[in-house]
Length: 242
Image (cartoon, rainbow, N blue to C red; front, side):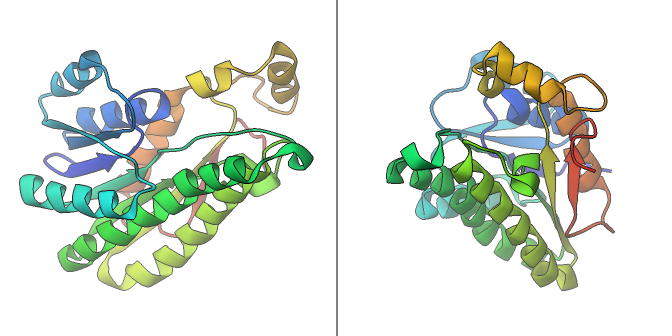
């Protein structure tokens, strides 16, 4: 069903983004792999081993002009933009009373504005195609909030609102827009947490285990395949938020 389509994945050098890129490659999608600082040759080779094209592109999605040039390049070289997964994201955790303006702005710019930038420029291509799937990475923190993550929670809650609004705007042309809200997933980003923080998180997960990056990747493929689901937020969180 997805074979031969083009999937653009931001923040795809490692972790959840890499798992999503591999999942779509295994479905036969050609992959546009966006990364901010670096990507290993091994990652590119893993994707190409699936018999698909992998186009790595370095750049910062919080830059409006970069997002425009990236998608223009994809359309020119790959012929279409069928799937967009907005996975690029950062954290700058700090208690509210100690959080600097830079720590707030940087998270909003990458997570929320970066998602807007990519959706803004991909949507014009998808509307002309009268098809496309946009999948945004939210978080359970954007649904329930979390102390020490005012900036991150705000960015992810914003993505949820953006997702629902975009879904309503693009639906008449057959373009879907959904969001995935991961819970506690084992990645490099969560590896920096203390054992005490990890145990605290585990205590509120009914399934009593942490999620794996593949769990999120499966949800992304699900949204891309189902053309009658739009404007939804899927919690992939072991039951944290019910």
